[in-house]
Length: 272
Image 1: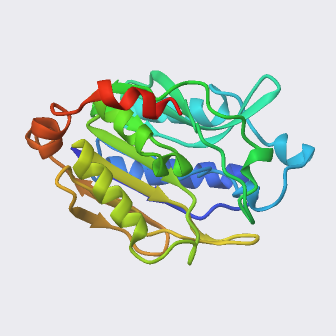
Image 2: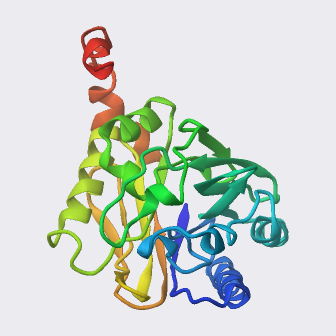
């Protein structure tokens, strides 16, 4: 399986952001990608840098809507799976949402970010309702794919739930800024998740300077044995990574860790 992680800067020109995203999709498809994934809010500025206003909330869009429909057509034309992330409106609520589109253009579903943070320059609780779609794992032409959106990756319960439902690849759309966390922590977190759960983790990050933050890029892919096998830099890039999904079944987690779980002991703790 060949993964492509698209890290591109975003501006207030939403049409240009989408056009560049589609062009990157074509470059990835030309390079043989089976699945193309995008960073958090890939086709718009990172709005939560400032507190929510009615004008900013009005920039959300439905699913399906213009962005998803454009990618549905492109996925069907190129025979490639896409994992997007955008600012979704559903009635009077808005969400941080990853639609998953199969290689024939079918919208398989959407994952909404479950846990919503709020701190300086990440004022997300004014923008996003807590996700209510659960943690689906999608049967795609490229494999069984789960999504853990940005803040959700910090919750081991999320990463384990995707493994228990049979995810082979977990895509993590992220908005991580330069200097936000100690060096190496992103990698360690995704390496441990990949090793403990026996799947591929693919973290795709925003990149470039914006209103209050400079996003770090440095997207990367980890295999089920916890190794980083591909790493992007800090500029616009389409990162390609070849992974063998047969490694999922051969992993320590799938052969040992998941089989030896004791959920009868955990239920009371998880309910706290």
